[in-house]
Image 1 (cartoon, one colour):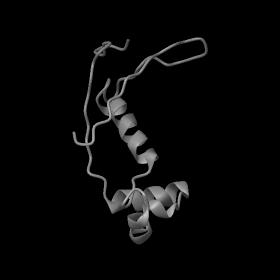
Image 2 (cartoon, helix red, strand yellow):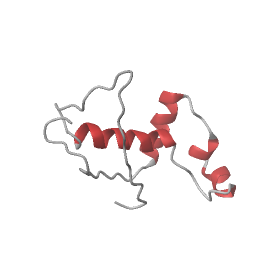
Image 3 (cartoon, one colour):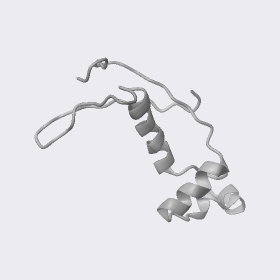
Length: 95
């Protein structure tokens, strides 16, 4: 493993996602699913309100690796053909 990173290490980041996050992400990706930005329609859906795109969630996971494990200016070993790595994540509603 990279210097300073060991199997079993954990890190945590949290963010309150707002409309200021949701709208630009939709513009960048072209994902205009109304469940992500139409409050009236989303409220009538099975979700009961606006839902955050999974890409925003995966972006937070990327940030944990980039900023906390192993952190800025450090890197994990590069993966190539024939290599194997495992990952474990914990999804928590509130951090």
